Length: 151
Image (cartoon, rainbow, N blue to C red; front, side, top):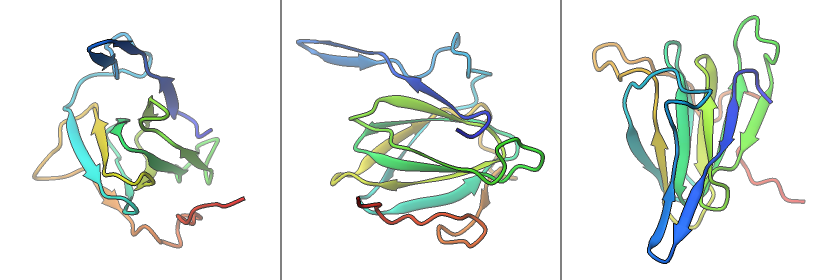
């Protein structure tokens, strides 16, 4: 596991009316402070990656569909520098993934329906100077192949 990445199993409470799922609480170990909350969607088979933040941590939950979330540690001085980590959040695996600043990340929608992903970063999005550092999904700088691994 990449240093600083935390995976929290989510609490789901169900009854005859539906269900409630807690995602991030202020008493969680990974909670630093609130920046904003946003929802993004990804169509089946689409890859959104790579990107990294220098100032913010992300807290990602896939609330509908399934994604393959991939993390790459390119941080200087990190004990896990060069490591790749895969996580499969979504309806069949309700987890929050805490992604520390400096870790490249991206995902691929692996469900047959659009994936809905909620992120609660600890910083506001700065429209004038975005903390978004992007690489193409197929960059040679990150040793990862997005294809399905059969076996």
